Length: 363
Image (cartoon, rainbow, N blue to C red; front, side):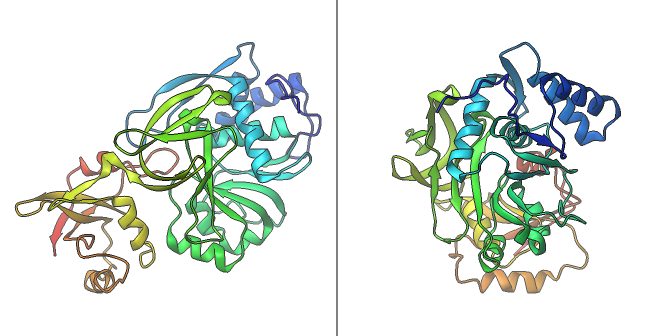
């Protein structure tokens, strides 16, 4: 199959029910910038950059674990990413898709590119907690954050294929998706890989990530994932994500090496503990560490202060959990007024922890 050029707008592409050619789409972008809401202005800015004379485009990383960076990419590489997603999920020309993500980060940009290149009928809605509010339409393909998916659970029978990214999918959310028989997938990727490069099905609890066809993987000496993809112009991209590689295109995500807690010589991954806690907690939280005279570092649960929270009952639930081993049980709770987040809603752990906590409770 001949790969379409980034300058080509598919003749079946519809935006909110209307077809626009290259020139008309520029006019739409201009109207978004001048007259649109904030999310439409971001969309308009991106469209103007996509439709200009340059064969490259600047993208900004999310800034979850470091300062945001502006990086330059070939537009054709983004087209290749869109096609790989279409092939993997078997989405086709004329499929109905919902765009409900911020367009100033890669996930929202890629959803629009997929629609323009693959010929989707795309509806734009504001990136709210529940994008299906007052929306009864059925869609073939939708991308959401975990928070959006959780708040949209009663409406997910309106989605034929759902991809979820931006943060990990909790056990509680995965169980709900399984119970409701939603054809959902968790994605793994980043700005540097031009959206997701691997997915895992929600229908099978022990499932692992499977790489898309254009990606090959390996590990560095830290057991962290290394990504290669000529189609994306990605060459030996070294991540900070520790993985267990099962074969040439499947892996299990362990957690970020820069988050590892060494407690009494035991290496603990906060993301693994958080996944286990997500079976019993519906709060906004994350796992971190504090210095400890005996263990070097001790595991703590970081929460937003909530007067209605029954701490005694919470800790009993955690201690009675069969999934946590003794080293993983929090030895304290740190309370903050709120978490520092990126625009897309991801918690900035280090930035949050650099603030003065409201209180610390030793357990």
